[in-house]
Image (cartoon, rainbow, N blue to C red; front, side):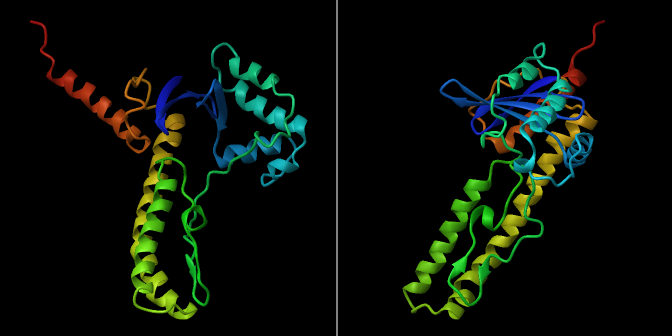
Length: 245
């Protein structure tokens, strides 16, 4: 089953396999990124089948085994007459850093975002790593910096900073204000992952959506809402459709 989704202002083509999902990401300038997505239990099972410990780093895996892992996933994700499998055969260097394993984990629990006795504060992914399912990582880092800058600027206009006092006067209230935002968005990202990944493999909810013509005009974070709205609209139209006499 193949369906499109909206991400980063462009259309990503997804194809669901038996235990993995393939994604084609257009990169511009006639370039295309290919991703094979699978969950952590699947990773453990695949690695075991190829004689690897579940936590084996990607860089420690021999090139031939990397190819075998990718081919196993590709063969279980049928698309365009084996196009994905043939694409893997064109790769001549499986140790290339452009071929990597990206563990999709978030910061759970959130780390402490500053050091009390030093002028050190964490922003962005170093403070709150998100699942990339709602497209909010960079935006949130910019928002964090703006909020911190406002508080820091106001403090510097009225006081000379000392390490301990700066943490209490700026970092602590900033973190207290921002932490609910981080937790809320992290929760939304987990829900999106559950809906757009688990639901694909346990309850295929995109069967009736062959094409979504809205991209690139709709932000990625509301893509799921578009799918839900389309399904609800079809259901309501069927209910109000006049019956033949």
